[in-house]
Image (tube, rainbow, N blue to C red; front, side):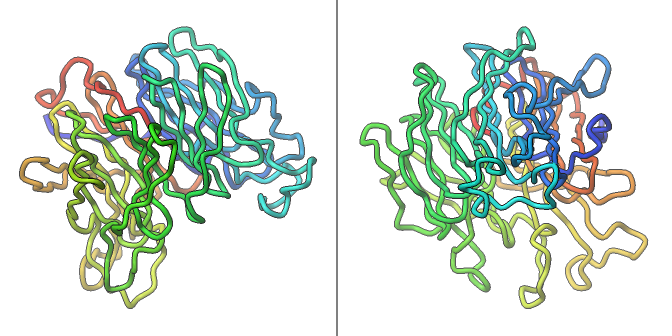
Length: 410
């Protein structure tokens, strides 16, 4: 059997313009956030793939469950941004909201302009606990007042959620037992897009100058690596080369990650070697291009990193028309998304299948996940309404409970 891909549009949320968060839940099913971050007075809706009907189920609208109506006149609960965090022991999917959606009567929203305006200011990132066994909301709380949650991580053993706030880029720890949040400190000015955990319960991210940042709960301090993450040295010095997506190997010994935003690079971090781990530069994730020619950073993109049941790393890279490096015919779409498989042993990469969205380009994939059946899913960002892709895997690359070990960050 060959790989096949299918497109599932968020038809019941026509205002959705992005799907930033997509994750497998503790129940082995795929959850996605149908976000509406540019439409005034809208909200994010949570959807789940239904394998029995091969369709999407719309579970709830975030504003309704956290008592923050989308037509209140405040900035809206418009999106879940890399902030699904499952709990295997509880069967709960935690999720935290992000800002950017304008009030119902305004064309845009600036968190700084409205910071002291109680009628306009974003109320804050809402943390919701969703019981996947009963499909009910257990409780909610405001985890970061006035700010959004850029990404979320769950240390299940210690019952702590970690988050990065936006726009101030502070590192937040939320104790699930006491339901209290604590501000650990500021990271920088440009948010990284991911947090990840090592076996010592240290939390890792990066700052806006391309350095790894680590929080050690033993010392309760944020530490900054002296080393800069790999980047294109022709037109970058490490600034804005923050981490975008990351996934752990099955044995937990290393992290595969990709940077953001200009010519993303694939890297492998051996967290347990040396004082700051060992970083391998696996090279550019996307095609070559002429760095002297300006281009939209929305075009050159890599995301959706996930390990499947076969032990291989899968992700999606963008490919675009370029007269020198990729002379696609005019009849072809200008941009496309390509699913890539990487062998962790040999580092060999193989292009598997194109993601096809009818009438639109599909080069920008946010997050990826594998469900309990072993099929891949990818969230998409583009013209509204957006949706998600399902890539059906060959039977010889599947196994029971393919989603395990589960990814604990968004």
